[in-house]
Length: 144
Image (cartoon, rainbow, N blue to C red):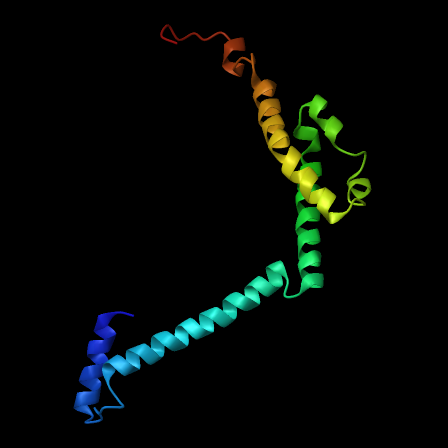
């Protein structure tokens, strides 16, 4: 916490004549910081419980939902991949999602870099050796 707050609190306590051994600007600052950190810790634990689960069952559910979301994203990019790389996909995403959570996570970690590269390569090849539309038209400008 900013030392200016401590100074302001000290001025306030002096002005109101409430300064004592149990009431000081340093104690006040320490109490505020402690309270903020305690609330932050509570919020952090709640957040982690929602994202990662608070027990074994909810952890598994969170991991499954994350794996399914990632797999669905891969299948949404299917038409943007090189045809040869589509061979690593199942016929449908629903068919793929029948696998165990561990299998989904392992599959994603194994093939995700390939799919990312495939999408980039496909986009690059789509415009390779393609001339600008301006090159098809004659210009009357002597300084093109």
